[in-house]
Length: 399
Ligand SMILES: *[C@@H]1O[C@H](CO)[C@@H](O)[C@H](O)[C@H]1NC(C)=O
Ligand SMILES: *[C@@H]1O[C@H](CO)[C@@H](O)[C@H](O)[C@H]1NC(C)=O
Ligand SMILES: *[C@@H]1O[C@H](CO)[C@@H](O)[C@H](O)[C@H]1NC(C)=O
Ligand SMILES: *[C@@H]1O[C@H](CO)[C@@H](O)[C@H](O)[C@H]1NC(C)=O
Image (cartoon, rainbow, N blue to C red; front, top):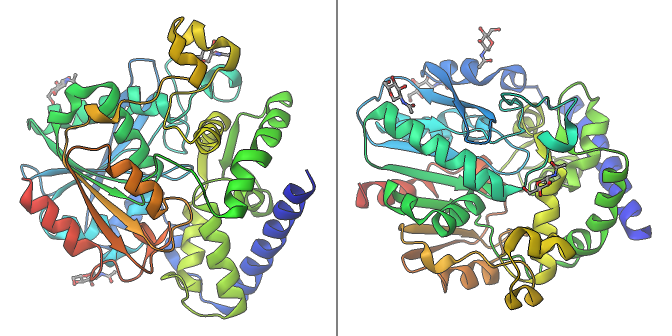
């Protein structure tokens, strides 16, 4: 527990110090306090939203930019503890606004439990805590993603859509294509930004956190009945900041915060002013079990279903294979074309793990962005000249 507490406290301290100092030094952009529709309107796009109800009763909010109806639909899926906002906060140079300006019909998913999708037909997120928050990215992939895709296809009258995911927003497409292979033909191309499937041999601090610290933290949280994590609602910024180390992007946010504190410079393609906008929108909520599942994958080195330990036979049937652990996702079943966009400085979606993933995919392309960290793929200030042209090439090639 020693290293854990030191790590958490140092993150907490550095981040709040960074935020305080950064706040003193920079003009706070209005986007920090604007909501989704206000930001899209500022950049020229009116938005609307729909509600999508999943087979297991979660009620999700799906955003859409109005004006490009009839053109190729593109679905954007955010990462852990994040939301649809992440794809627009860069404004005119964001992925969403740029693609909309290019004529694409842009849709934004929000997964169960985030600030827009904290709702269920019969369960309350505040009172039925153990039931409502009982999901990992496995359930997001099996229920939220297909419901979202089918809703868009029905609404647009198309047979196929293109998709872009970031971080956990890529994990769910790998699981969908494996577990519900009929969805492969509904996706013309999937662009995976900072892909996450295997998580072996991570950088020491990340590995220590995921494989040793997290299981202990999770047990304590569970004992206290804490299942919802990284939510921005009603918490002071300080409390929210503790967990800057817990989500996938937390690591980067801390680094950005620290670099803006120490150097005042744009070290990670995210300058201090933009860091303020990120703080206003990130931390949109996730479930404890999501990080449990990533922790298991990191420990076992296998991209496998949730490990229920001694209860595995109840969930997966009595089977000799279970001696190895829960069943691995069958990546060979994935047939949709996939572009794997990998960052040389990404501490979560590291090159060696992406290469291992690629070796099991039948139709994957690999791209390397040397200077990119995990957050740069959605928040970088130079996406318009670096990443987006390649994204557009893929959309054109496969539509
Ligand atoms: C954003 O805020 C405006 C003004 O308060 C409100 O009319 C609009 O419905 C909000 N949009 C969303 C998506 O919450
Ligand atoms: C965004 O870009 C468009 C087209 O270049 C420009 O007309 C508009 O003023 C920009 N919007 C903002 C808020 O910067
Ligand atoms: C959580 O989900 C698992 C798998 O679907 C199920 O076996 C378990 O009973 C659920 N727990 C609760 C508290 O709902
Ligand atoms: C499909 O779209 C039509 C027309 O918008 C709508 O009436 C219908 O309810 C939709 N069906 C589903 C399953 O979403």
